[in-house]
Image 1 (cartoon, rainbow, N blue to C red):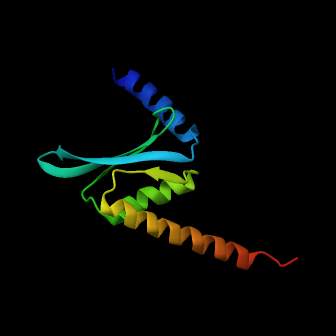
Image 2 (cartoon, rainbow, N blue to C red):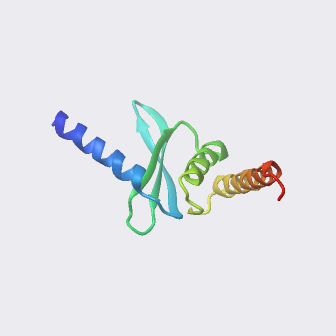
Image 3 (spheres, rainbow, N blue to C red):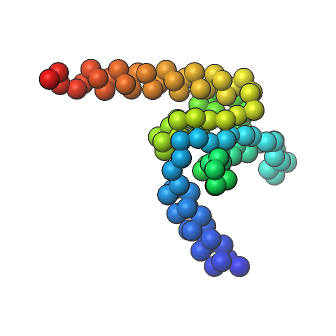
Length: 113
């Protein structure tokens, strides 16, 4: 069983890392880990229902959502579908501001032709 799990884990990582999409679904759910409450965050690719990211966190707030959104942005995800919780909207605003800053810096650093 251990060998099977190691083979599956390697294959799953390969599939997750190779999957590219511009739209993803994010959701979180409370879980009990060794008697402590934690939040399981999952991001799923919309079309094929492929898991793009899984994160276990002690909090459910803007900082965790922003971290996930930035990771998805680096992977090429441009649209995130969420259940409307307030931390998603705030994290999306933060991600938008980061994108604007990146574009401005990129343009400022490009030589003028």
